[in-house]
Image 1 (spheres, one colour):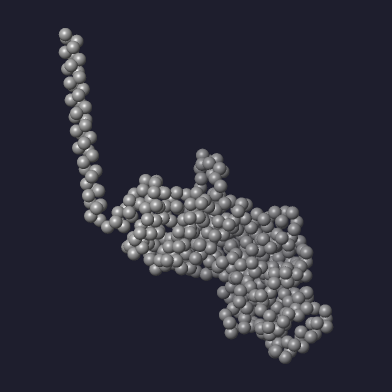
Image 2 (cartoon, helix red, strand yellow):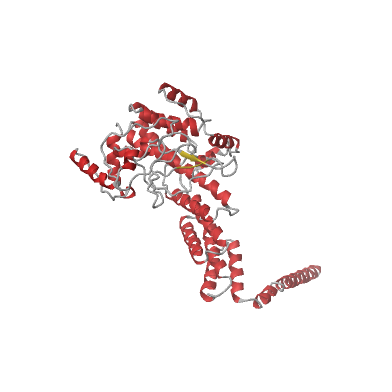
Length: 471
């Protein structure tokens, strides 16, 4: 009897506990119906947009993108149309992966095309550049993403130079150009050790001319000087040694470069004050250093970790797009004299960029930017003499000796073709025809009187380089 009573009492107790739990759960479910009642009072496009953002926030990217696409297709005049397009691209960017990054880049570019005047277009351009930046490979791997990142950061800085994100884009561009320069430097060093002087000079020249902020530009200039010195062209080697002394005065190779110039009986140029201020600011800038515990983990990463750490922190990076216009003039004039600009460290100071050799001057001026001073400070050198566009250019003759460092007379492109700058500037149209006839009788080829230097084929440039360079 007692056992039966205990069973009944325990059963009633368990039943009462179950009823209490059911009532508690029922009370908790009632407030959940309140937001649905509030959503019904809102606009349907707003409901879709908020629901999509909530899905993306919690990692449900496909569901969120589906709701955003529904909003775009169903409500083409909605005020959330632009935000929906940008949110789709953001969803692909956050999800990551090669295919998703490609979709994100395409979405951001579409947003820039359709909504170029919205403030979000600036962020979209920055996200395009960062998408390529995050996919960069090491310097000895595929360089496609690095080149695309360089181009996109350059576009950002040219379109939005005063935007608050401009300093970040500028630093990322320095890091990207460090990776690209490191790749060219490694190839040039390989050919330098192998003994292929022509291939080594071409790679190293592109490094020193296009990436003056590269951490090993002084080493590239030193190797170029050694190449020409071993080829019995000390006048050209002195140009590269002079660039080390003038543009990288605090380099460890500056003292050796001065010794070389003294041995050549060539005046030693003075260090450029702006280069000194840039190198001083670079040495004082904080550089990130990885601990010994994290170094093994960095070796497993595919991205360029070391290059991002040693990249320059100050100075204005090169904002000009890359162009394959290296010619014999670049080699014989030391690759062009870097043009320094800006004020003190921390602003737009430091080495801005090298002169883009081979680009044309504005129409009507009659002068060409290919006339690059062989040496001396860019601020003190006199402008090159204007060349007659109708004057013929012949190849295959010995060029005039390049000016040593410290001189003020420029080396024009006519020295490569066998004519002096003054003769090219003073030759009238009638004398040009006589000069062309004389060149034909001597067995040399003359170009057309109205030929444009920018349309000259690369094969002719390489042919002229083989005739001029001693190797």
